[in-house]
Image (cartoon, rainbow, N blue to C red; front, top):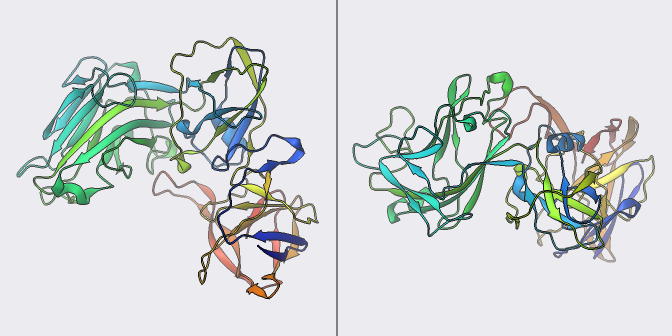
Length: 457
């Protein structure tokens, strides 16, 4: 292990590990150990007794309180754990509304409910492959000589059905199993486009579908607010949604943008468990553990989706005891750096370099040493975030990493700067200040740290 000393106007000791290290993070003020460092957020819940407890959480409010900018909940990331437990509990949730369970799908036009059609192909019920219930819908999409330019699957919602109004929902989630014939194997992983009609200023929005693994179930999500680059100010209106497409683009037979699917290519898709998520209104319910009254609900945002799917208890009854929630907190792979000597009342914390750190994001409550990994002869960036209680200018210095005669030269320094985003290109963009430019610093340069805001280095 190499121990290094760096100076941010104060002395900060950093542990540099050259091998993989995993450990749970501790937390300040005696709070429970962070369950899993892959989850960056949690909220404490106190059960009012024993039985089925319900925690009614407005996740939009909680994500805003964490200093995130228009963040969307990854519903599938939710986990419930006893305060001092290490194994997630079964739970049920009421944030999602079932659009189609596909157990007995309607194929062809219908005057009520949801129904499926296929352009150049066929659809059918399949009771042998599903993720919930008893079945799924199977759609075979063919790219034919002289056929339709956008072969694909369409899901319709009959006019007048209450589920045509998506105004209160932030995300659309579904399970999909893709399969292609031999000539279409080169189309993976981006197999189709997603098109939602009558969604933005009366027109449709088309965006690339999710990257999918072949021959297995994939958990897919669509951001609805924003929907691609369409925000409410741009005319986002989800009050009358009656049609969506999951379509390919045929090569050379499409006017305008030509696709890559050749004649003879076949795409087969199984769909199941299509749901709409309202992250503002709902509850998480679970059966209490005897003798345990304090729990944590761990969660993450949609931009981090990819957590293993949770184990749900679909048979869990109504709540019998209330759950009182505390203030959400950040932790996990966001953590304050332990072993630091901190002056000037600074909070110093670590974040992966792949994370865009907003000025407003909450300081993590979790605490762990800073671990940096690099292969011999290679360069790896790492990110440290400084939060000052008052506006102040401090000199920033960093020394070489050393352990006896072993020395790694001092890293180069950059200040993360921010640009103001006024227009968006897709659903990952956010309006307002966005971290992007890296301003090079010399050792000893002075950095202006704003009051009660994050400044990453």
